[in-house]
Image (cartoon, rainbow, N blue to C red; front, side, top):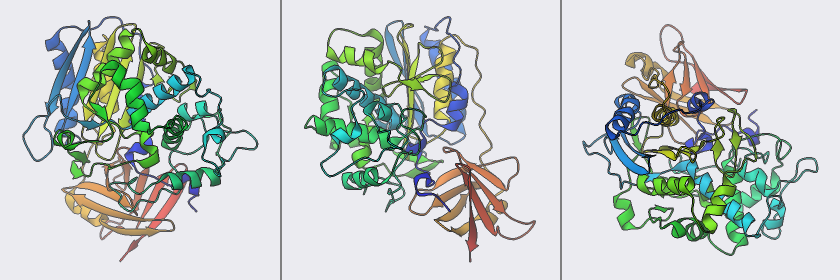
Length: 470
């Protein structure tokens, strides 16, 4: 039986620290020499991004590089799969979980101002009548939320979308508080890293309410306005939407996310590459003023992450202890950002394709420009024989959900009840497929002839069989 707090979720924003990316970024050697020549930077960017574009995983991307006090920008590929139009450096992208860095800075800023404390109990900031559950007497504190150690899962179990391509559209504060009041943490708060959009979303929402403000408003006032940054926002006007890149996933068009509701602080910001680079440069160069003090605090480690580095106030810190980074993914976008203040070096990568390859590509661009010898990522096989793929197509019903399998030219897609369709990658045994952007595997039961009779979903140590519906 599928446990409520471990409900399988295929929403890309739920697992933005991608499985592929984690394997690549676990160790970052100490950089020795930066490449400064513009033509060489462009060559590196093209070399690492072109395989992903050519494989049809993303339509294109914008990359920003800051080195030797100069920011430069590079575009690769097209704005979408249907038009031969290049993206602009002013194109707007959903940045997904890089938003957690902004929420971490807001938290650090509130701590520095004495408005909250790192050890403030979540219960102390909740609306009257809403009481957070503890874990055997240990209560959740604010620093547990930003460090992904609250014990709460990636997403709330009562997130049941009406529209799988816009999964948070109908998720409200009332639903969030109902979940917080009913679900106990799964582990002792403060002891175990469990990546959680739920936790960071709650953190930003609670801090803003405690300051009698809206989340987007308070972040803009305290972080972006002091820096003069104007092109990072959640609310978009008509002019913004004209620059908004189309959303794609698995080589197909999909929807923009309209909102994440009370979980906006975990992943709903939209930005251009130059605006993101302005934020990165401010973290590198520093300056006088409250916002720079908050930046410094936000980079302080709070605990360990699973890849050998540290987790800070939103930021992740590489094992080299000098490079801070984060990545992001929504239903139709993925992103990567890394800053190294000691080297005065930063890389920003924004793309309108939800792909697990964005993080390793961004990492390799960063590594090669930092003087390391790295090769482009190897793109896994994307398709199977079209006739074989057609034998997998169908509806498979399980105890907790139904899986719908479709295919396009040998590219196989899976959609769970109430969720969006995501692409699958064939494994060595072509009865098995793994999701490109989440840590889950589907295994089909299929003979030498005829249609598959069953598919089993493997995730979080669970096996969830689904039988074909005729």
